[in-house]
Length: 349
Image (tube, rainbow, N blue to C red; front, side):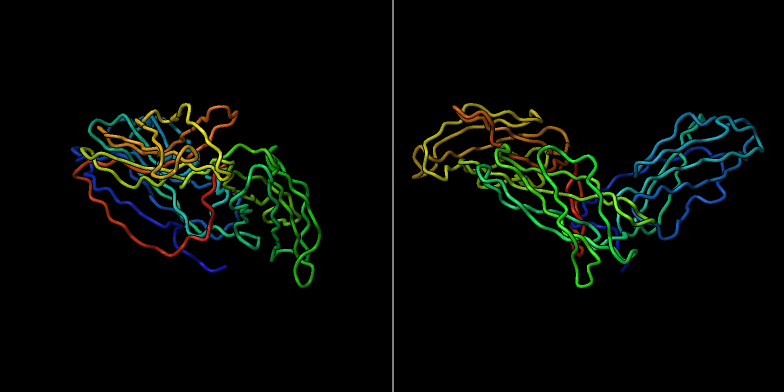
């Protein structure tokens, strides 16, 4: 598998000053960074970091936490006498990561005026499957009709891939194993079904397939769809970009009936409780189109991630609009770096 850089399409770097240290740290690590070899998705890395108390008084570790990653850190002993040693053990699940990846951890001790102790772990995560990340993309789906989509999955680790029924399959999606795929029958064909009647909005998630690949016996499959009803938004998700404190964020979306049916917006529920909003007729749109304008005058930095549920008069299910953006201070330095496409799905369960 070709090696790649950390997957990202956009990096936003925010300048910040590090706290000054006024004391000499007593704990000295044999190595602050460790590297694991090539591993498969779904593996768990266990790494030991040894250290010595070079000070004249005992040092107690009062907290451990993961800066980047979803692992766990344990320390033994918690109280380290002068001249004695200790060990921090990291257990880091690799889950469905791909390519070069890195994790950061930290210890906080009872030493006055000593900043946290930082240590890191990195390595390369590979997939035993082709494609490396399997995504079922239903694209735009009419809720009255539903949709089906076919995908193929194979593995370089076995002559013929065997797939068992999915684990954790949500009720909103169905999976059928159709049979062999590939020129030599080395893969499997899968058909996914999104049934009719799913509420309008973005649908996404994932499930696990069990296989006969010894090194990676499970593979996570992602799915996504943009379900529309009769009233269709001009944009979903809503890209709000970056707003600085002191600026006013305005976002306009049109809601229009495909069949030309008149409708009214009854109310809007904002999961983040952030926006003021108004609803007006569209220009030359009559009763079959409505213009939704969102307004926000932020006072503090925050991430704008949430959902708007637009309830229509007489309709049981709302039109759900996802939104995302960011609020930063006036002095924040933002650098935009264009990187190659990551090749991995951004769908989250």
